[in-house]
Length: 253
Image (cartoon, rainbow, N blue to C red; front, side, top):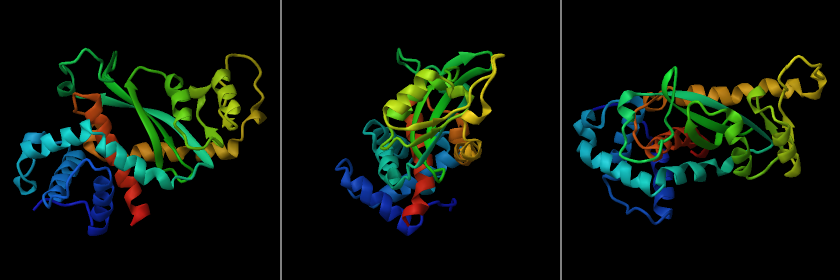
């Protein structure tokens, strides 16, 4: 039997949230289906190679795809993240290598896969709370700058108190945007040869920005996250939501 990831308490919490959406029925096989999806998340193997102990690979994939269409896995993440502490929010982006099998989707959209000298890639734009737990993320093409999604990250925060980012978020427009919402920005300025007031940034607080880096490091233990195999941006986002949900589950149980 392959190694499982869910305890009884964790599964009951997930099942409670899924049932509350009204989008699934309480079927006994859902737990092994969910374990099969987690196995795929953890190992990154092709869907066809899923161990038969989880059930038919085709059934598991079709159910994952259906749950992804319904936004169920994203709802799980949002519900679990309601415990977030918004006193400090740390933001950053991380580039994910897109496997060659992730390209070629039969859509006219880019599916958040960008092309550059380094090859195909996707970027995860993430905001974490004071404890380093994820609260909101977006996907974009890998070559997009962090600042391109900065205002969107701010807009999706439940509270705006202190927003901490690296020099990739250096923008006077962003600072004013955060201030207009009643928040404070801790973002160092790039050195373009001019004199910079180094005391304008709370460097003590800035040192805790490693919390967002830690969150990326944690989810990249899952091979389906560290390398993108999903053709559709929607399905890859569902995998990312699932990985972040696994970070939150111990906080609830």
